[in-house]
Image (tube, rainbow, N blue to C red; front, side):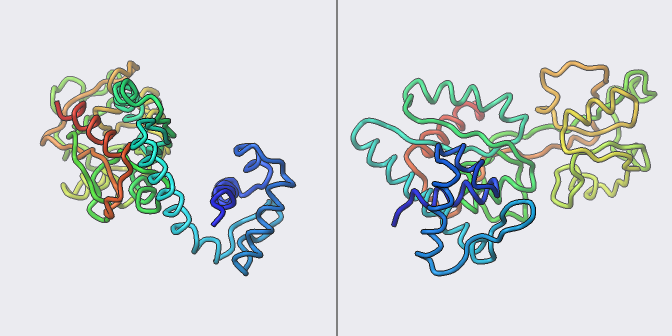
Amino acid sequence: MDLKKWHVFLAVSKYENFTKAGEELGYTQSGITQMMKNLQREVGFPLFNKTNHGITLSPEGIALLPSIRNLIAANESLKQEISFLKGAELGTLKIGTYTSCSIHWIPKIIREFQKKNPGILFDIIEGHENEIADWVLNYQVDIGFTSFQKSQTADFIPVHNDEMMAILPKGHPWTEYDEIPLEWFQNAPFIICEYTYTSDIHQILKKYKIRPDIKYTTHNDFSVLSMVEHNLGISILPELVIRGHVGDYEVRTLKPYVFRKLGMAVHPSHDWSPAMKIFIRYAKEYLLT
């Protein structure tokens, strides 16, 4: 099987555009078009649908995605195994992560990792709590730095309890207190990042039966901080998000102590590549000490 065509297929599915896929992989638009035509002839059914805005995957193409990602991941693992046996240690690790983890953790882990494994390259993809574990299960990434989600079936390696903090505008009446009771958030004007059923904040508020008055929903934790700075409401954010960040807001501990459990999501099949095994060991050594 020609894996080159399937690599192209994944790039096309990502961009839904032959030209952009070609730019990423170094092919011309006509070359991509011809490869995908040949691939569709080989499988015997259409993989794409044409629209006014470009192309989308056909139902059959969507159905093939998990198997193709698995195939590409298995091939990468095989190449790594061969290179490690030869002493070359070459390959690529795909890491899905929260922005906060990619800022505070990932660079330091990679720095230590590459001192002994300089041939391993990294592809870092940032995402949200409701998608990173799915990326792991679908072989879009090898390892996911995410919070523990009861609904996910990916294996989870816990590494850190990330305390949740109250975020208040300067001059807010609550800033005179060292601790903020969670019940005070009931009906309070609130700003939140992606208020979904599986979000860490949602689970905490649900557990303590707190219903704030959600005024704004954003897709970025740092947008939440900016909106709090402009006195548009209050919020709750993880300590790792605000670590090292200086702004026109106040931070207070919550009562009771609440946290999100951070760790590494990995595929339950445990078909880990050599580079994955080494990286997980380095990450655990750094984060658990």
